[in-house]
Length: 369
Image (cartoon, rainbow, N blue to C red; front, side, top):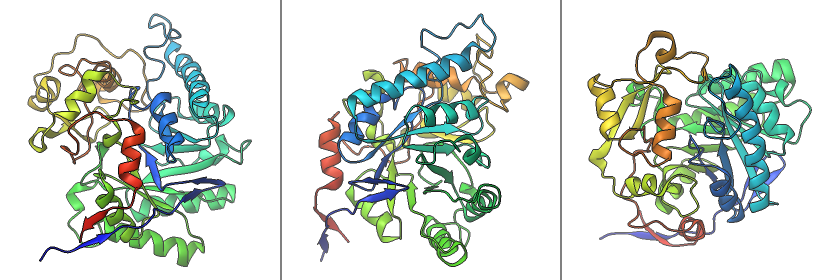
């Protein structure tokens, strides 16, 4: 006989001085997939909205490809604009900015986000060992690194304690088996100690027993409904980060064609694609992804922004410009751009509003056990 249980009310999530009504963080998706419109709408609905900073300046009026260094100035000014816009949408909501450590303007964007009123700074694509230095003048800004294992968390915590006398306000913990975009360590996930449940347990023990604190743990990767949320919370998570599911919403900043491509995706459409940062990515199959996988992609334009600290495309001519690939897809060229996706698809049959989706995530319901 099938068994089911009635879920309860989701508990609030505290990160630093900020308390979200629901333990749901909207994932950052570049380029301009999660901008002010999506982030502000999620924040208004009781979650934490996050703006992806990567490539914000690319299609802005501030970017002039003919001028050296124009891209970084354009990114900074575009981020200022985006934060001003999100505050018009959600004056009192909790807003974060996601910044990639692997980008050349990481420090500048962190300082800009803090100065322009972001509540949180979420980092990815590297270890943010100097982040507290960049935000020292803004102590209310919560700092939230993304990690995939205990070792990364230990290195960040030990460095921050020793050099800055502080700890992360929360940790985003990546479940590499299901997370969209770049991922690591999936070849090790079946080894003892590398399942997401084991990583949560290890991190909780480290924080409580060695650091003497409870750092909120927010799990990301493959979370698409209330059942997934309950499963992560039962494992010991304090909250979840959800990315792909927010794409098929009216408020998502991407082109309608991008949303519909996700809407129509099937499990067999999920592929792993090499990236110029030297990692694999999880994306949806299209003409671009297939050509990259086959090694038959022809590039018409070289590096336009010099955006990454290390880039196989810029430095060796291999792979492709990830900035342009992500931007093309988000702007609606769904066959010739890179479409990041988490591993869970076919979770909805229509594009819905953020209010509807957040209600689906948060209202008590009956789930199978």
